[in-house]
Figure 1: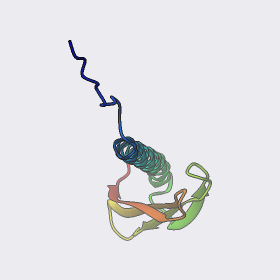
Figure 2 (figure 1 turned 180 degrees about the horizontal axis):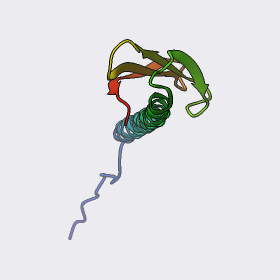
Figure 3 (figure 1 turned 180 degrees about the vertical axis):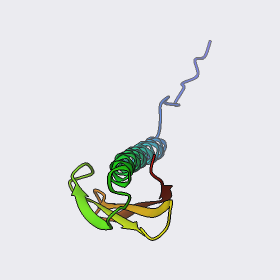
Length: 126
């Protein structure tokens, strides 16, 4: 009986291993990028939500001012909610009833980009 010698070695070649590592690195890198972008979108949405809440608060202040005096003064003031850079500008035309008011909230996000939310509304006395 003759035995045949088997010269094949099982396992992966160096090229197959390098390709597998490269594909793994691509998958991990793209996953981390997507995760980072997701966190950025969440922070932007949180800031916009905060700005809209601040606008609601400003609207209530303006309504109380209109109830007390019948007029609203155009002005700008600072609210320190969003990265301590939030500025609220109010433009009001007190010659009309109801009073047309434009409220603009602007701030800089973490990447130093200027962001703005603007709301136009009519305020009348109660």
